[in-house]
Length: 104
View 1 (cartoon, rainbow, N blue to C red):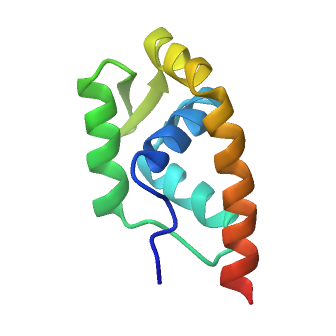
View 2 (cartoon, rainbow, N blue to C red):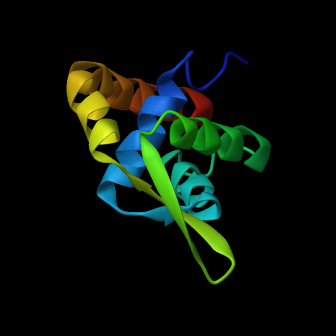
């Protein structure tokens, strides 16, 4: 099965999710699973390193709440999201297509 997210696309979608609201990593995993209607859920080994990379690039930041890291998008992250808005629209169409394909 081909990867659900092409190179760099999960990064973009993580920024989108964090633009909606601050979230902890497990919540990000559950949201992705929900948006793929249970047909895809990334592993913690996929999501957490990408969140850490986004943080090292200054695109997200985190606070610790109840022992969990809660990630929030920064102004730089919002700027990247705005710069890639067309790509994000394409990605959301691809996600719908992927869900349909995985469900078939």
